[in-house]
Length: 249
Image 1 (spheres, one colour):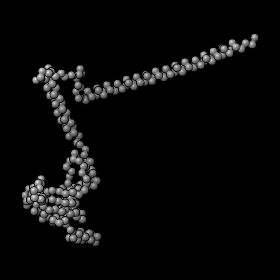
Image 2 (cartoon, helix red, strand yellow; image 1 turned 90 degrees about the vertical axis):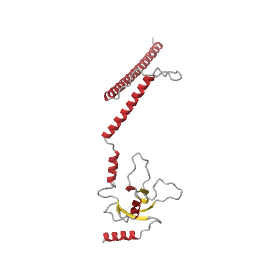
Image 3 (cartoon, one colour; image 1 turned 135 degrees about the vertical axis):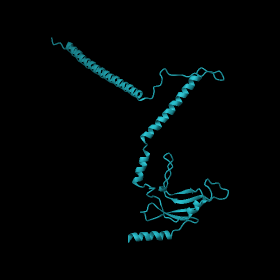
Image 4 (cartoon, one colour; image 1 turned 45 degrees about the vertical axis):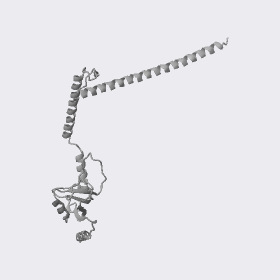
């Protein structure tokens, strides 16, 4: 009984549906299991006289009330846009396609077995999976970039060597300063050697800091001993002075 009432209510709502002036309503469903329908409002795309449009005339369908889950985002680098219902322009190759779209009665299915649309947790899982780059593809991209960069640097170095010592049109000679040490190649062994040298530098610095701390402690102990000896000598002198003043015989 509940299912019959829902179907009857859905049919009654579709019969009494009011469309905006000049638009036709096309019901769509997310899947076959869904009973309630969402409606798209369509009409032929027209512009006023003298107004230019990037969409072809007589072949473009203007669609209102498009759900946000009906289209894929243009790309990960695109700026984020507010989520919500939007409009769409559908350009057909022939005017007959526009006429056929305007004659549709529906309902149209968004998610089918041949073209499923993910939603909810499944959509989040797919989005996360798509956001993680493939390690092999990432390695290929990095290697390609480094090869291009190394090639560019080699060409610039060769060009600089060719122009070295050659005066220009005004007679000036360009002088290029080079370091005594060549740049280390970008290899894993070279990187490990650099890391090992940095580790040794840190160890030496920590050892020097330890020696400095030990030296300060030794100096403080020596000063404490000097103060103690000074106080003892001072008390001994006071005692000797007191003994000289006190003479019972």
